[in-house]
Image 1 (cartoon, rainbow, N blue to C red):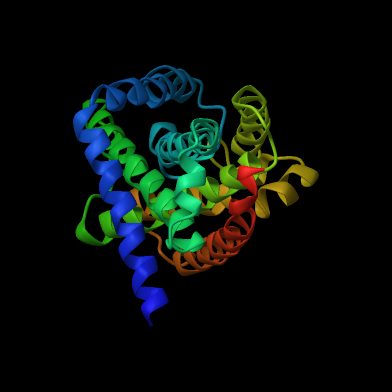
Image 2 (tube, rainbow, N blue to C red; image 1 turned 135 degrees about the vertical axis):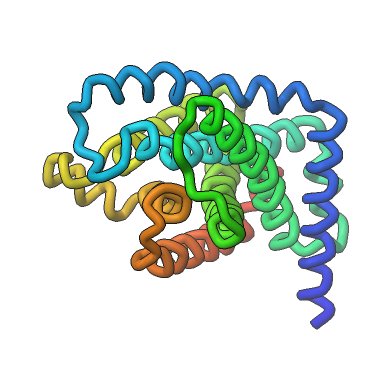
Length: 257
């Protein structure tokens, strides 16, 4: 029981530190907003005029909004491992590892921190969607669901980034591997086009891609309002995030080597 209490408390402390960082340096929110604004304002607007991608009874801008939100959260989370490498190089990580803080708490703290930054992206995209007059479902249920899925998705990709950080020695190499992973995952998902129009081999990849379930859940919550597959999406994300957290916890001490 004491172990669980320590995990919860230490995870909360690291998340609270992250909120303070955002409050002290709000310029990061502005720089992070550029990418989703470009995707929605340029890419989304352009393709919505072409009408070449079947999106059912919703506009292409509505269809792509959950995908761009997912992309923004993923990009924040997957590069979280750079902080691990920086902490290792500065000697901070070694100091953390000799404290009585449970390894799982360190991992969960990073995951929650990435989720908090991801939620800031959601606020930005909601505001920009209103400016572009993109019709989204905004209710207590949808906002709660978006919060949950962002935290789970950010947690998964943060855990993945920590595993990568435990295997590479330099930040430059990590950046290269991070880009190699994120871009294929993004394009091999239902973020910017339906899975149905993909070739068969790519459909298989998309169906085992956690990013697809994140997009699918967000799309149900803020666009279609069809919650029939939402429990399935959340369960997949919970399982994937739990597994990656355990692997990250096992690998985390090895980053000091």
